[in-house]
Image (tube, rainbow, N blue to C red; front, side, top):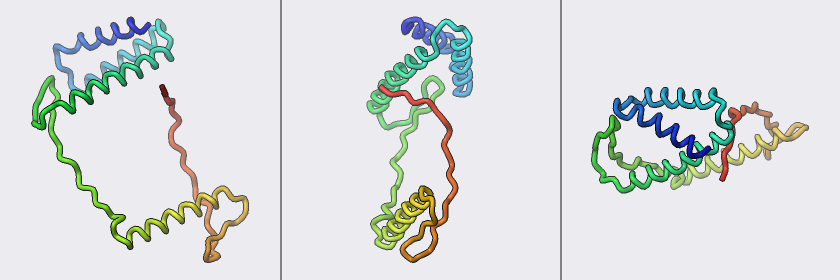
Length: 147
């Protein structure tokens, strides 16, 4: 299974290397490849997904190592522009005692709101003010892959 999947992916890659597809074309080609893989019924979807996760980890690791070894200069290869970017400025707001105090109060309020949400009866803060039950939003369901 692993060898067949790798060969199919390699065949897909080789078919498009000569034309240097754009990022959008690459994504469309990959989606079409995935659709063909799913529709063919030749592979178990969970096995194919697991193999794709393993390949993603391997390729990401290789990319990260190569990226770390690149000189800090601009270059363009295979339609991909490689541009060095300086680190961003990160202001340390918590160094300000007023900001740190407000942040601590905000975190305490978050804890009160969480407690009020879990409580079946009215919940009050230290000043005797009722803490409202706020609404809850959920993130989208997903699948998680772990090693």
